[in-house]
Image 1 (tube, one colour):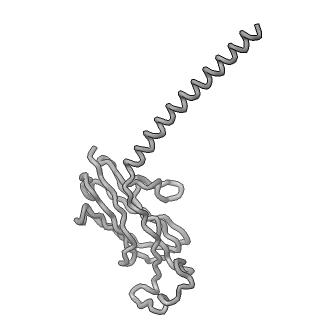
Image 2: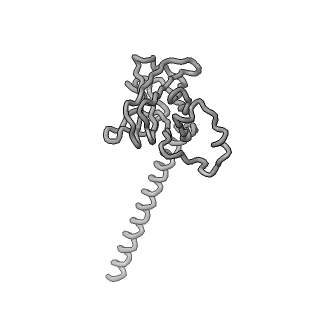
Image 3: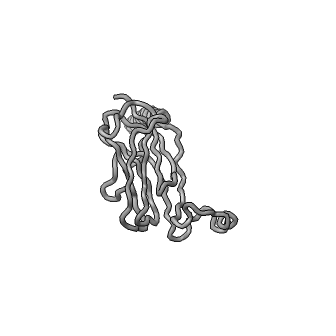
Length: 191
């Protein structure tokens, strides 16, 4: 009787191990498929590095500042800094920032956003985004800040009414007061 109970317990434990091993194998296949999907959709486009813009320095010589590397890589107090230039499919309604970077869009989307984070935004700064399909300019839009703020997410968007969302390779270039901050590339895919 005890031997039969032990054998039954042993068989149940073995069945549990087999079932768990099967589930682990199934999840490994799913994990591999997800990893392959992520790798297939990765475009390899690097994020744009932050650019520091100072109204006082625009159009002037920076020879003295170029020789002083004591604060290399750090914006001076009060200098406007723009970072995280990217494309997105939407804006987070709570933060006003990008809801997540997207580099591939269906041609049936209603809006494509270009977003950036601005530290020490100053009133009067003129931001512009120029949209290109390949090397051809397809759309541009400018915005002038009417306020100063310590941190702000800014965004521009285009719709199919602004330019046809024809499949192909695109880029968007952002400038502030005529100074180019960087570009972000994206693709529009056929449905």
